[in-house]
Image (cartoon, rainbow, N blue to C red; front, side, top):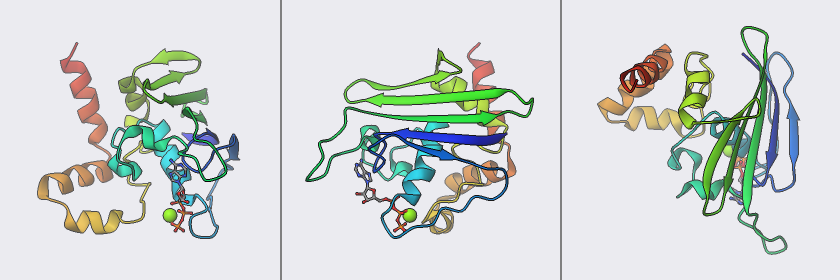
Amino acid sequence: MHFRRLKLTGFKSFVEPSELHIEPGLTGVVGPNGCGKSNLLEALRWVMGESSAKSMRGGGMEDVIFAGTSGRPARAFAEVVLQARTHDDEELEVVRRIERGAGSAYRVNGRDVRAKDVALIFADAATGAHSPALVSQGRIAAVVAAKPAERRAMLEDAAGISGLHVRRKDAEQK
Ligand code: ATP
Ligand code: MG
């Protein structure tokens, strides 16, 4: 899967609509401390279905919405759009939006879907919200400090088999 474009509106420090074109190959994000590099990575993880507020460095899920500054009012919603090209060379657009007091919702190619559907899209792609390819600051220390069960989950992610759990759970519910 090739990620082509990431659009952010009201997400953390990205208060005005911002668009990032992702070219094939390696992408580097550079800038001074606090400019939003980690926020960009979090936006990517969030649109892919991240459900843990803690791993988004927030207390609650609504903390991803621009909280306001002395000169700028807070926003009522945050939205992230990820456009990608799939293995089958098809266009994929995933939208996640959260509104204060109303929770978050997903759309895939214009249709309303469940969080679980988004998890399934990325489950096998080694590109999911918990993909070993996304290593955030502090993650290495977290691996060292993790309890055995947590470390096992991390290793399963790294081995690319955690998608199997998502599929098994989905199958068990049918
Ligand atoms: P470093 O180089 O130190 O790792 P960074 O480029 O990764 O920095 P980020 O951590 O992405 O920076 O951005 C931090 C900034 O984002 C802070 O200024 C913080 O106030 C701002 N920020 C985070 N969440 C929100 C929010 N909900 N509303 C407004 N600003 C936010
Ligand atoms: Mg950072």
